[in-house]
Image (tube, rainbow, N blue to C red):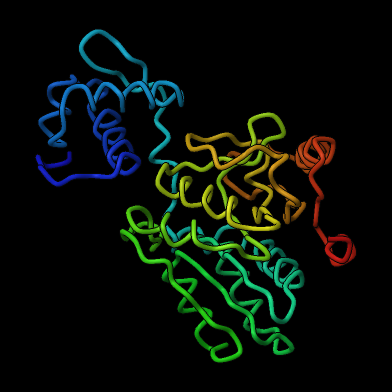
Length: 285
C-alpha cells in the first residue's frame, strides 16, 4: 500500500499509483485517495473519471472499484529477457537493418528494444547515428558503439521495473525533437484497438516518441499480437510497420497456435500495417 504523501505527482504517474491502490484494496473512497496523494477531491474525481474511461476501474458512489487486474501482468525487465529470446534476437536484427548512417533514432525501453540495441552495436558499418532512449539498460548496451553512435538519455523519473525514465521531464525533451525513425515496444498490438501498453507512464512516453518521428515502427514478439492493455499508444494507422516473429508464445498453459498468430498478422496487414518478419520484408521498408 502506498504511504501518505504530499509530494506532487504528475497526473499519469499519480493515476498509475492510484490504480495500484484500488487494485490492492478492491475499492477505494475519494477521501482516502485524496489523503494518500495530497490532492483535492476534485482532482481525484478527475483521475477516477480518466481511469474509468480507460476501462481500468468502475466509478461507484463515493469512490471506485477495480475493473480488471492488469498491473500484475507486467514482467520485470530481467524476467522478460528470457521470454522468446530467439525471436527477439531476430526482431532486433531486422530493426537494426532499417537504420542508415547519419540517421537519428528513438529507441524505446524493454527486452525487445535491448535486442535492437545489441544488433545496432553489431552493425560496424553504421556511423554518425544519434540514438535517443529513455531506457537506462538500453543506453548501457549502446555504450560500446560510442563514438560511432551518439547516445542521448532523455532524463525523467526512474521506474525500477523496466529501468525506464518517465514523466516528469521526458515530454519537454521529446517535444523538441524530430527524428528519422522511432522503434517502439509495447504489450499489445490489435487491428481494432491499436497499440497498447500495460503501464500508463510508459504508454505516455511511447506516444511522445510516436509523435516525434518521421516514421514509427512497432517491435513486438508474437505473444503481443491480439493483446489489448490499459494505456493506448496509438492507432494502427499511425505506425508505418510492425517487426515481429511468427512463432507462437511458449507459455505453460497457453493455447495460442501458429494459425492464431497467422490470423492476427493477417488482420494487422489488412489494417494497412507493413509486416516485417524477415530480411526480404525489411528491405521493402
